[in-house]
Length: 303
Image 1 (cartoon, rainbow, N blue to C red):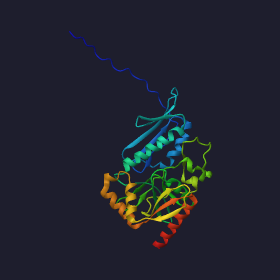
Image 2 (spheres, rainbow, N blue to C red):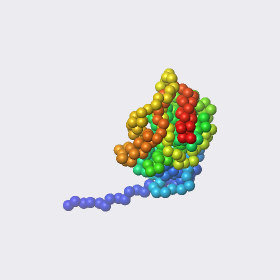
Image 3 (cartoon, helix red, strand yellow):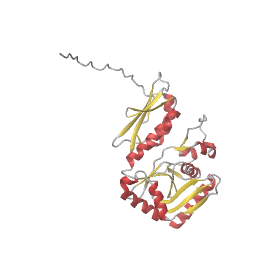
Image 4 (cartoon, one colour):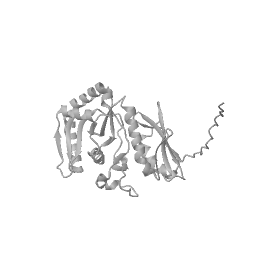
């Protein structure tokens, strides 16, 4: 005879009540809606600045919930969660910033590609003209757009250019600019205090560079410049054949195969109507000057 016993119910685990020091309220990054709650006031001060440009009036559809909780007995006492799942742990807001930024960017790409043609590019506007700078990582697109902002351009994005496939207009994604350590000496006026340790990024607002955020949507791109930093080179603009420009735009499109027909039509229209060129960057000042010259030429063409 087999004797069985009833399974004991799981022991209840006490849930520590949380007193949130700060709540972001509704935020939106293109089609990624979210909010952020932080328990530790010192951490809240650092992360509040990170999401401030994305705060919005309300949410529509699904919302992600980010929480930063204190775990004082752990070796790394602050932990970032999204919808209840742990993303990472650290000691300060700086430790969590890059992971939070990464998750927001990834969610923007996942949720926005069904409705936008989404390019890995930075973008700015001036005089009613929109310029986009598509490029691979470490090519200088963020540094170049930061230089343009310092010279009076309005900010659109430094990560994902979202193009309406029907009308071609661009919806701003005004996240903080993420500046790698190699570019820090070019913007000494923006140095954070206290100084950050090696291996992290500066997160800059357009206001840090004396610029404004474009009130979007903004006009379809009329200047497409593919930046590439080459140490020790001479800065130069190299005109591109439109077929080559279209190939590069396709390569820079997030999830291109998922909406291939729509994406190709939209990008083809941009390549056909815009001034397209490659920008070989030797120095930032020269690169900004070269882009400004292209802008002036394009504006004169459209008069």
